[in-house]
Image (cartoon, rainbow, N blue to C red; front, side):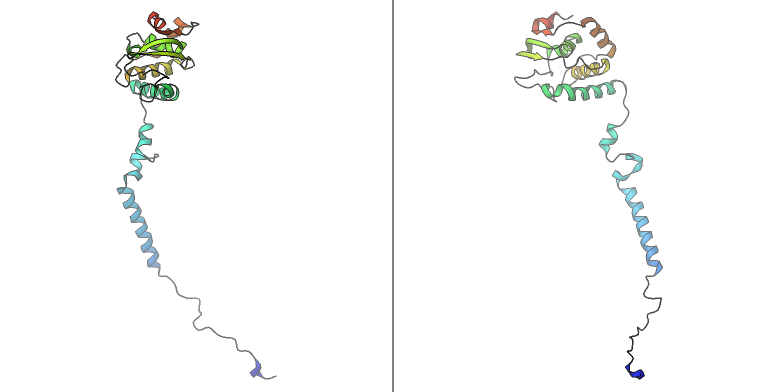
Length: 199
């Protein structure tokens, strides 16, 4: 056999290990752009400013978790308790629901100087006819507040007595504790006459 029958393999010209490379300065430039872009973004976008919001993502979250004390804390607790227990019947705005529950806004019982009247209704329950804001209501209310702690019960009473235009005095946990001791074991309030009898 002759050497002419050998198959010539194709050779590649310029197939060295160098190949085509990206200059290192492009990587350096890209990193600098990313770094300074991040710094600019951090300084000029308020929702990303760690000094204001960290670890929160919105201003509402930040406000909700700010520590509160005293009267502000009591009102906040009262609002939460009201929302979870009372609002379903009396409404978020305290206006009540026709045929279901009377309004708490402007209610004579809520604004009475004697908090014991308004406290008796959720503590003992109420059955019968009552007058609220010039309307007659025939109610069958369960003792919705009986399971609340003294502090939560005081907070919701304070919230109700200071919201929607009501301007009655605050109720403390010690007031509630003393009040509960005096009415322990009593039956549900019997309508308008039962409310008036509470002293």
